[in-house]
Amino acid sequence: MGKTITEKIFSTHLRDTPSPGNYVLDIDVVMCHEITTPGAILDLETRGIDRVFDPARIKAVIDHVTPSKDSKTATQAKILRDWAGRHNIVDFFDIGSNGVCHALFPEKGFIRPGYTVIMGDSHTCTHGAFGAFAAGVGTTDLEVGILKGVCSFREPESILVEINGSLADGVGAKDVILKIIREITVNGATNMVMEFRGEVIDAMSMEARMTLCNMAIEAGGTCGICPPDQTTAEYLFPFMKDEAGSVEGLAECFRDFHSDPDAVYRKTFTLEVADLAPQVTWGYKPDEVRDIGDMAGTPVDQVYIGSCTNGRIEDLRAAARILKDKKIVAGVRGILAPATPKVYSQAMEEGIIKIFMDAGFCVTNPTCGACLGMSNGVLAAGEVCASTTNRNFNGRMGKGGMVHLMNPMSAAAAAVTGEITDPRDMI
Amino acid sequence: MKEFGGRIIGLDRSDINTDEIIPAKYLTEINREALKPYLLEDLKLDGFDPASDDLAGARVILTRANFGCGSSREHAVWAFEVNGINMVIAESFARIFRQNMFNCGMLAIELAADDIARIFQFDGNLTAAVEVDKGVLSISDGTAAMEFSFTLNDFERDLVKAGGWLAYADAKY
Ligand code: SF4
Image (spheres, rainbow over the protein chains, first blue to last red):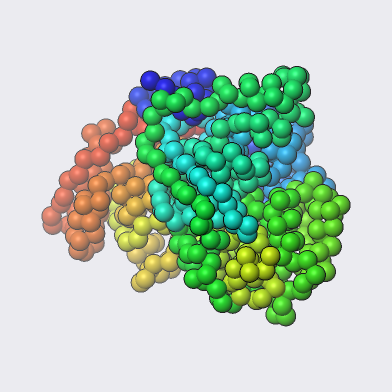
């Protein structure tokens, strides 16, 4: 019987089967940020086992609230910083080099096809874009990961999501994933890996694949995963030159991490995207989604462009297409948080930052910021935000606030008009 | 092993997420006890008041499908724990929340949708008692009791007995 990509990764990393259906895997990369890691660090200290399994396989970043906003967040940052220092964690990113974890770590070439990756963050599923098994975990799993380099998982079942057709201008990976969640619901993929395949995936950049995989968790998925191909090889070649002489050679190696033709899936979901319109959430759950036309005219107070979902260079370019030579309408606040310093400086070189600033956007440093309602643009009760982030939960960006999730062009269009607007009318 | 059982509070809704269980603004707390007053502060549920005595005296949560979805924050599990709630009974759980419960040596019990509905219909002040080894849960209103069986595999039972994944993994790997 054939195997899925995920089953192949499970079998190459299997350390133990503590009972049938439970698998303890060796972990290639354990990633840490300053919100969920300090609890693990302090607990290890309390137990007198303040050790790390392998400093080279641990990556850490201060990204959620940076620069720190108060004594408590400064303390969290300090705990992570001091710990990274005393354990010689070389890949530690602090002010000046830090950015949103799920955008920063791939950019550094840390994620490779066939890897197992964990982080104390649910959007770790993003890294499956590289053909890795990457799962969000809680602080205890993270703690064991740091100490022992292992993590336990249940049966690696997959749902095959096949996406065909080609996307219209103004419609992107965000709309594809919102549409999928709309169809399969917020627990349609619970305990399963979402394996994305089809023409649309083949044509997508790594950035777009990351956007897609990023929201697998919003359907309950353990991980999103894309078969690593030529596009993956082009992205990773600068980091993997020693392993293959050419991009083509690297792409060939990556074929080991494709599912077999006779692999078995728990279920299959197919989507044809030719007629797909930009999607927008209307409620407090990520499956409460409508076509943008059905939400048009909804007034917004703030527009937020950034996050691990849509804060990459392509997203900024897309939004800038709408914003060029335009102004944010009076009464609306615009915030841009480029996801990483590289994205930020690239956007400066390309003149994108100027377009945003001329339009009246506030450009912040790379950080999670308002995405989780901790800093940099928290909403007041009753306020509405058009946002490129991934969660519209009640209170997510501030108590009593309402978040409408959408793609970066739709968000930019809302900034210009002050209400939810189909970006296709503005290109 | 932790103590399980006691007074039940029902949260009659599906898809309750961990932002609702503990909002992100409290994730700056390093001390778990500090989370205590904020449990379920942002829960969107008609008639539910996080400040009520119902929640204060509760030891068990009864809820519907996909409980604990969203953010991976283990703070959601800790916020229950510091409030004396060591057990959640649901139709289903989000993966990370469920795993966090066992990782902390706590019990996440899944029952069929019909059984959950029957318990919700059972009026009055309910208490739960559990026999972890036998996989038996009994729900009582003081006069009558209903029994349900639930499944835990050996690994999950071992985690509960060890008091969590760290103790288990440190001894074994
Ligand atoms: S940008 Fe938002 S969703 Fe992404 S890691 Fe940061 S807080 Fe989480």
